[in-house]
Amino acid sequence: MSVARLALACLLLAACRSRGANSLEVHVPKVVEAEIGKETSISCNFVIPENSTYAYVKWLYMEKNERKEILSKTQVGVDHKESDLKERVNISDDFTLTISKVTPKDARTYLCQVGAGSAGFVEKQVDLRVSKAPETSVTSVTEGIPASKNELSQIATCISKNGFPPPNITWYKDQHLLHSDKTQTEVHHAVTRESNGLFSVRSTLSGRVTKEDRNALYHCQANYSLLGINRTSQTESFQVKVFYPSENINFDIDGPDRELKEGDRVTLRCKADGNPEPDYNIFKVEDSTLDAPNGELTFEHITKEDSGPYYCRVFDFESMKELTANVSLSVNYIDVPTITPVHHEALKEGEDLHLDCDAKGSKPLDFKWKKQKGKLVARGKKLSLLNVTHETLGNYSCVVTMPEVAGLVHSKHVFVNVYSKPVLMAEVHQEYAELNKLISLSCIAVAVPKATILWSAPNGTSGHSHRNGQVNSTLQIQVTPELLKSGVNCTAQNSLGLAEYHFSLQKRPHPTSPSTRIDKEAQESQGVIIVAVVVGILLIAVLGAVLYFLHKKGKLPCGRSGKQEITRPEAHKDEIVVEVKSDKLPEEAGLLQGANGEKKSAGDQGERYIDLRN
Image (cartoon, rainbow, N blue to C red; front, top):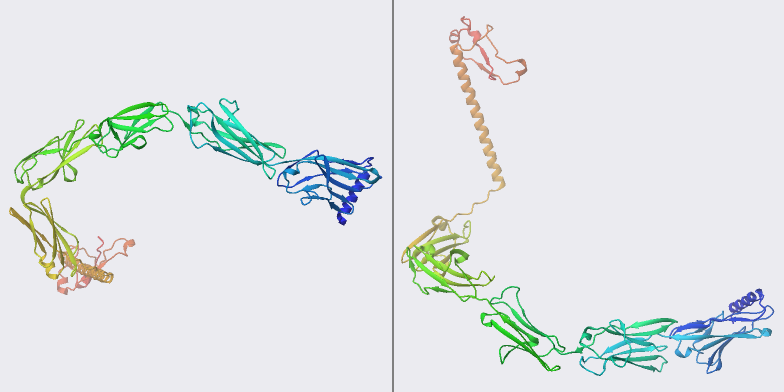
C-alpha cells in the first residue's frame, strides 16, 4: 500500500473513533444498476468501534449458494483471488469495488466484509443488476394477403436482439394495441439466449385483413429496462399489401378543359378499384381491342375519325366478375376549305374576278379573306376583285374558324395574277458611296409576265430571284469617279412595257479638321470687324455732310463768341461728341448769319462742335 493510501485509511479510522461508535457497522447499497459493456462501482462504507483497529476489507460474491472471494484489502495491500472477475475488478482507497466491461454473468449478489480485530467482522450484501438496450427491427411480408382468406395470414415479424434482460414485444395497428385472440389476431413469441449471454426475442404477428386494412399502419414496440428505468423502442410504421376484388370501374376522358378539337392530346383512362389491378380491355368496336397499357389509351393528335363511343371491360379472377364502362368522344373539326373556280387565268388590268370559299365543320363556321401579311380584305365566303390593277396581284387566303371552339382554324390559299407592265421599287444599301469601295443597289420589279431587270453598269455583279410575279435584282459594283458622275440606271421590262430608275450616287463628305474650323472662324470674325469699321466711317461722313448743309442754310444757331459747344447736362459729358472743323474760305464764311441777322466774321466760323447724343 502506498503512503498516501495508508494515511487515508488512518484518517478514516480516526474519524470513526471520534464518533464514539460502540460496534462495527458496514453500509452498502441494496441494489446497483449497471449497463452491460460499461464500468460500474459498488461502494462499501464502515464505522469501527473506538477501541478497535481496522484489519481488512474483503469483497465476495455468491454463486450457487457458495461464497467466492474476489479480493481483500489490508494495511499491507490488495490481494486478488482467482475468479472470473480477476482481470476486471479493482478496489479504491475508499474500499469501492469497480468492475469494468460488465457482462450478463456479473448480475449476482456481492458481499462487503470488514474485519476489525477484537471487534470481530461484519458483512453486508448488495445485488448487482445488469441491463442492455435491445436492437429492434421489423420485416413485413412482401407478397399480398387476400382479404377474402378465412385462415389467419402472417403479417410481419419483429426481432429484438442483444438485449438484457429479455424485452417484451407488443404490436400496434393505427396506434391501437393488438391483442392475441386466436380468431382475428395471433402473436407468437420466441426467446433465445445468445452465446454472449444476451437475449433475442422474435415475435410473429398473424391475422385476418379486410379491404379497409389497405391503408392501415402497423408497427411493433420493444419494452425493456435500462439502469432501472423502463424504456421503449418503436419501429417504423409499415402497410400491408391487401388483395381484394374490383367492385367499381371508372372510365374518364383526360383532355383540355374545353370542347375537344382536332389536334388535341386526349387520354382515355380506365381504372378499377381492385388490388391487384385487373387486366383492362379498351375497344371501340366489339372484338377489336385497342393497345391500352395499364388501362390508358392516348391520342397524341386526335381527329374527327376518333369520335364515337369507347368501352372498357375488366374481368376479376378473384371474384369471377366482369365490369364494363363506356365514354363518348366528340371531336370538333373543320374540313380543308375549297376555293372555286379552282383554276383561273391571269387577269388583265381592269378585269374582275369572283372567288367562292366553302368548308364543312362540326359546328357553324366563320369565313374571312386575307391577303399576304394578314390584311383583311373581305368577310364571308365570297371575294370579289373588281377593276384589278397590278396592286391586286398577290396571295389570298380563305380563313375558316369555328366561333364556338377557340383555336380551331383551317385555311386555303390562292394566287391571283394580273397582267401589267413592271412597277419598280429601288433601294440603296449604303448612304454614301466611297471611291474604290463596293456599293450594293437593289431593284424590285412586280409584273406579269415576269419582268427582266437590266443594269447600266456592265462591270458590276448582279443576282436575281423570282417569286409570284416579283423579280428582285441586286447589283454590287466598285465605285469609280466615272460612276459617281454618271450614276446607275435600273430598267425592268416585259411585253407590256418598262420602268426605269436612276441611282444618283453621293460621295461621302470629308470631315473638317478642328484647326481648319478655327481658321475659318477667325477669317469670318476679321471680315465682320472690317465691314463694321467701313460702315462707321461712311456714317460719320454722311452726318458731317448733313451738318454742313444745315449750317450753310442757317439752320444751326451759334453764339457771339465765334465758338459754340452744344452740350447736355454736366453729368453726360462723358458721352461721345463729334467735332466738325470747317475748311471754308473767309469769303464763304462771311455769308453766314447768326440768329439776330448779323454777319459773322470768318473767325467766328473756325470750329464747330455738334453733340450727336440727340
